[in-house]
Length: 238
Picture: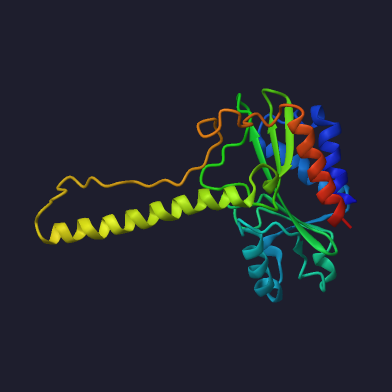
C-alpha cells in the first residue's frame, strides 16, 4: 500500500513534514517520499509520443469536476507507466500537482500550503475535484489536513456552484452583445472603456451556513476526513 503509506506518514509525522517553510519545500518532501516508496519520477514531457492520445484521455478524466470514481491506469500496458509519478503533469498553474500511477489506478494529488492563519485552502477558480486527494498544510499552525474532494463538497452542492457561474457567463455574454448593439446605435459611448470584469472565484465561509465547517484542522472533522480518505486509498492502492 504505497500511497497509503505516504499519507499515513504525513499524519503520523506531521512535525517532520511541517519543517517546510514554503509550499515548494513541502512538495519536495512529498516527491522524496514517493521515490522512497517505489515510485519513479517522470515529467510529462518525458512521456513517449505513443502515450499522448491516452494521456489526453487521462487529463479529461482527472479534471472532470464530477468524477467520483478511481481513474483507471490505461497506460498500464507499458511497464514504465506503473509505479511512477508525474510532477505538474498539466503545467505549474493547473491541477493537480502530482499524478501517482499504480498498476491499476491513477491518483491525483493536490498540495495546498499556507504560512499564514488560514484554516482552509484558497480555492480561487477551482473547486476541489470529487476524486482528488488534497493535502493542506499550514506552517504557522503546524497542522496538516488530508481529505478527498467529495468528502468536503458533495456533487449536488458542486453542481449548484458551477451552474451559478455558467449563468453568470451567459448573462455577461448577453449583456456584452446588448451594449455592442447600443454602441452601433450611438445610444451609449463608453468613451473611457469601462467594462465588467468577471472573475470566477470560490471560497469557504459561513455566509450561507453559519454552522459551516471552515476550519479543516478542527476535530473530530479532521480525523473523520483522514479516515475516509485512507479507506478510499486502501481500496485502490495496489
